[in-house]
Image 1 (tube, protein in one colour):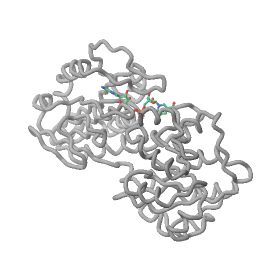
Image 2 (cartoon, helix red, strand yellow):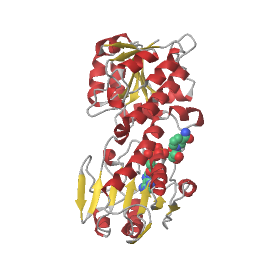
Image 3 (cartoon, protein in one colour):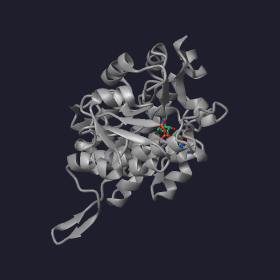
Length: 379
Ligand code: NAD
């Protein structure tokens, strides 16, 4: 099997879908790897590194025409528009394609007659943990969100007893404690802040405690907060209003707020309204990791710094791209592990639709949208 690695053409993307270490290991599985020249440059991997690992450097046209499987970071927006025009029915595209919010991306590859694997749909089961790109990227986002906040904040994180007096530690509040939120709790704690956290899923409580943070209990009746897959269930407007009221006092005491709340395929829930910002301390920094899906704060703007009533709100997009080397290492290893499941001893791709991982992630196959979940969304 020939595996193709194009350079990302998505605006501002610095990650690459496979790193040289992945190439070297895949070679042993009878996989030949074609890499577009300079594909890994922005993530710190040179063409020479890929060649040393056993890859062949070719043009973009060759990668896209000769590969049996094309691996990318972004199988959406402008890069998808390019790929869908050239992809052939016998080729397989693997990447992130935002399938729940944009099921039309799967439709585009189905229309081209090719196969598409959407990495966001890897099931959250133990066997698939090593292929879980959402967890990999969320780990980086949670860590870096805290560093962004620390960099912007007018106060330091730890308590310091100095000859010039004692500095009180910053108080950090993490809203939404999935993978990113948990990493944010751990990072803020390591930097010395007093950390509190809240999630609607009761299971998060134990995890919050396990990283040394304090769970915030809101006196709210919550039913059906978690889906079968372990994700948060969408809550009613009435619940969100009651949540906002209960959260106002907690927010008023914070120096740092990191928000990560998300519902797969839906607009992010608004946890912080403009009115709540009025009650917050001047100098507080909010980093909203849900900016790209609408924002957890009413005033968040993607990739802008909004200052309101002395509170600064950051809504960064693609945080994993700011740590492109490690992000590519994690992403590439997730893809390598998925390929090891899909490729047989002879190096031939074998899609076993009886396997839950294959069934959930293959979204386009033989001219059809292969995922029932996406067909429902497409109507
Ligand atoms: P996510 O990015 O979908 O959402 C982030 C967090 O926001 C979630 O914890 C969610 O409960 C929370 N949230 C949603 N609405 C909220 C609201 N109104 N108020 C407060 N919080 C709200 O989450 P994720 O990081 O993808 O993790 C989702 C789940 O999957 C978690 O239970 C996680 O432990 C689990 N998980 C399992 C595996 C595995 O078993 N292989 C791997 C990774 C994650």
